[in-house]
Length: 220
Image 1 (tube, rainbow, N blue to C red):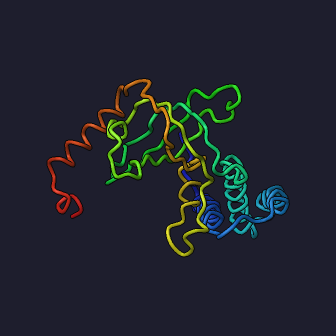
Image 2 (image 1 turned 135 degrees about the horizontal axis):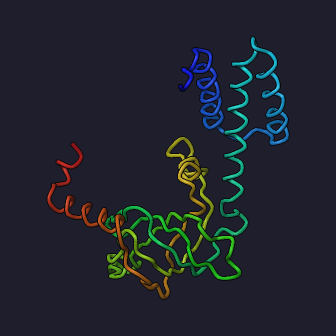
């Protein structure tokens, strides 16, 4: 029979979860050497000193969350390569957000070239805008969930420094595991395959709901 959790077990889980939450709420990353040192020390204290167990687990959760965040940040697009343009193929993950003059979606790279092998599986937050002359890009309006596209993209590292005190784009990208922000540049964009399964069904349902429900009612 499964053993019931004792009250201290719940407190231990809460302490680690609180530490992890605190680690993610900090405005920046702590020194990695200090974080790596905290792991064995906190674990040792938690196992050997019952009176210090909860603070040690709080510190352990904080260190693990910070190290994980540092690992994810290391995998993001390097700032030194901001503005570089690549031709990438991938699948649209989730719904496409159609806005006046532009579309937003997440593209997961699935067929990188030999020189782009490190991009496989990376998620890009893509913005596809209409031309500056005011015309509408007909290809952009074909975007749908689950489709596979080959696009020419200009990449930038997610950054919140241009919007201090506002929406934290870097934190949002970290939580969503976004590798880079990407902008479709003029060139040859090609639809490789239409979507199948749940993703295109979700896209179709979203469009039908948007067409049948007025925008004012949809927000209430």
